[in-house]
Amino acid sequence: MNISELFHSIQGEGHLTGKPMFFIRTQGCSVKCPIREVCDQPESLGFKGGTRYTPAELAALALAAVGPRGWVSITGGEPLEQSDFDELVIACRQADLFINVQTSGLKRVNAPWDWCTVSPKAPVAQLQLLFAQELKVVFTGQSLAVLTDYYQQFSASNYYLQPCWRDGGCNTQETLDKVYELNRLGMQWEFSAQWHKYLGVR
Ligand code: SF4
Image (tube, rainbow, N blue to C red; front, side, top):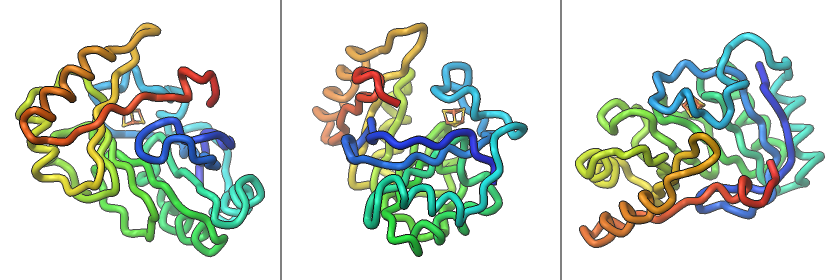
């Protein structure tokens, strides 16, 4: 499969923040994404480029970095656009790793993940995947109706609103205000920072 980058760091976002992980960032994303111009990983968006690895090679590199029962995060790009995505998940499982999948939710994940993070870039009605451990919405001013639909129609244990970084800053206060508004309406969203950016790690 085509890989944009591999690195060992801590998870910086959402419920698994702080967990050491080996990150496998796949190459390519064709999602019609409203924040494409400020995507954190612009170098991973094109389908050309990257480095070829087999799923077995990737699982072996992850195991060497984090050890048995450590975590691997399969992210992108959009990892579900890789034809051998399922083989990678299975190879990681056979290597005794825990698997975090990060996806936009536009395709179903059939492979056996341990923790799925859906960061939707389309209204809930367009998602193929409607359940995960966490839903993480990058807040760019979505309406109350759109956020309510996510909360009511997507089944998750954790709902996060995360500020959007543009031009070196992010809309932290606006995001917090929206979290509080949603909470007052009975929807228990939480705030997700991107701690790796504040800590200066990858
Ligand atoms: S879906 Fe994710 S990887 Fe693709 S452009 Fe949007 S933020 Fe970037």
